[in-house]
Image 1 (cartoon, rainbow, N blue to C red):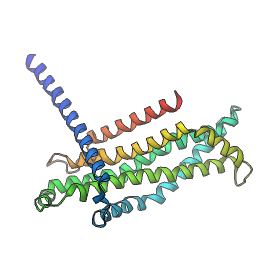
Image 2: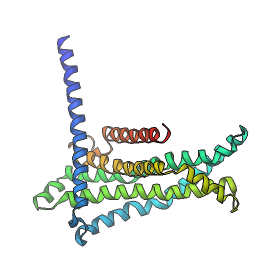
Image 3: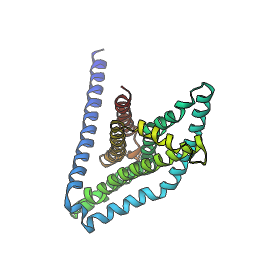
Length: 266
């Protein structure tokens, strides 16, 4: 009985230690990336080219597909909300509800998750494979600054892709919502712009921008940190997709979303 209690306490201690170490590594990587972004040397030609190349490579291939997907989702949700509101005699609130649900809440979160699945998690896997194959250690011995050369471009590209997809998709959502309610006419534009201004007051706009950037930082830094500090293993060479890393990323996204909801509606 005593041995079982001791074993259970040891497992709890190890889990708590691993969790503290993991969050510490995420915070450390975020601080290092922040310092590098504030350094003028990052924006010189030889250092800036890999960042720009990675930003284009991670954003351009998914831009059109996600925009079309966002337009389709927005059109379907707009139609469902408008029809439901009409059936209950709440048509005057339908468009505002669509804007709040789509633009404020759904689009930024969907863009961040899409970027995580298509860009930052595969990028984290590349880093993990570099470490496990010995390439990382060999290049470090040659004196290469791998944090600047390999990690920084991936983090910046993930942040850029997330913010870009969210911004573009919000514009698409606004246009789709207008067309779904008013059709191809300018008649509803004055009322639509007035309602948009009422929804996006200064405090809501500030929270929206902060949430979008925090989503981007979460999906850019957490998976990369998981891959960068992954333990070598013979059974699974894909540590960037470990459930623990995904759980931390989803926990941060959920916390950001809950904080945003409290700021907007309480």
